[in-house]
Amino acid sequence: EAGVTQSPTHLIKTRGQQATLRCSPISGHTSVYWYQQALGLGLQFLLWYDEGEERNRGNFPPRFSGRQFPNYSSELNVNALELEDSALYLCASSLGRTSWTGELFFGEGSRLTVL
Amino acid sequence: DQQVKQNSPSLSVQEGRISILNCDYTNSMFDYFLWYKKYPAEGPTFLISISSIKDKNEDGRFTVFLNKSAKHLSLHIVPSQPGDSAVYFCAASGKRGNTPLVFGKGTRLSVIA
Image (cartoon, helix red, strand yellow):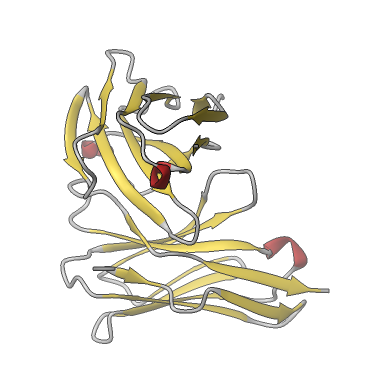
């Protein structure tokens, strides 16, 4: 069974540009979560999608946005990139809220570098 | 404001001894607690969890203890093995399925052979 897949693995952008990161959840999972892991920090919650809708949003500016598609895959968009956006972006999937077990399955992450 | 705190950035333990990783939380609404393990260049993987109605959960070499009055949980690994060397994240959630997981900053465990 395929795990959570993320693309691209690495992405280099310059300040002011936009970045798009993609995530495919495990088959059967309807919830997708995005976390940011910046250097020296833990996993900071960004966004949570379930059944195509945004369920919760972390304490990040509006230039961080995303969506979930009908096949439950998701993309994270970061506009007007700033140097401090350089981080590892982790996507995780889980069963939907009605079947929630607390266990998230993470992808290997997309490392974004902003120059 | 950090709701989940892991105050030890790193821990070194000899192979065969006990590893104890600690975690404190501030939000009394947290209902469910989990530990994740992360190797370099990999995503975190789920290790063990505990519900707030319990004070202990055991799975093989791994045991999680929860002290609700102190808002403290700990992960015990006995005996520690070199393959346990990784970063361990403590995470917490509110009512099941209604809130996302809040993670601590992690503790890097090194098990020395």
